[in-house]
Image (cartoon, rainbow, N blue to C red; front, side, top):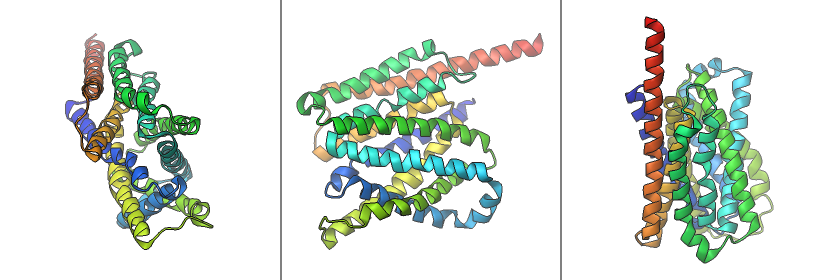
Length: 317
């Protein structure tokens, strides 16, 4: 793992988190639209934008992928996009942003723990300081909101937990597929995922919009269209493309830590939306989350040095 490659992966992960943090605001901005409609609208728009962008490379990519790859794209599209966002939106609308952000914030820990079992990864003991900082930060960032508003509903908690499992599975599977497909760029894989997600969203749109009894004005629908279009472009096309760059450049244990930035940026956007500065406890939380990423990066540097030294000894011996 070279320094330049690591820096590229970290930068891509940070910017992806900046885009993804926006999805926590969307259910609040369109609270009068149910989660199923938000998910269907977002991913129909994602599929349309991705199809336009991938069109010039379609013939080449179609020949480069076999049945197994297309089946993987279908599976990844379901668990990483449609199912995840339906559960996330439902959790935000029934359980609140704070509780949802707290549960989803466990993603870095879950992905890093899975990644620690892979070959040439730092040991769990070496990753413990990073994981401890991340966990402490997540507890702090949610403590005040949870103390004032409570857990709101069991439904919201269960949906947030389901979203956690869904996206952890996606992150691990997607990283492994990217490692196998060296002949497909990270951005092309993201766009293909978008095309497949868009096709699946057509099926989702039937129960989402057919027989809708809610009354919306033309301005409501324009706001909805603008919101799902913005999410498709920034959160899905750009965010997912950058995430694939990070997934290809970094080991899974470090990639997992990059998800922390989704929580960090979601919190910052929330402060801007509410027109306030973070409280002292929230500021400490954000510092702990960043410290977790720094410690995780340092653990990987140490592991790289040890591995390089061992390989040099084997060659000279």
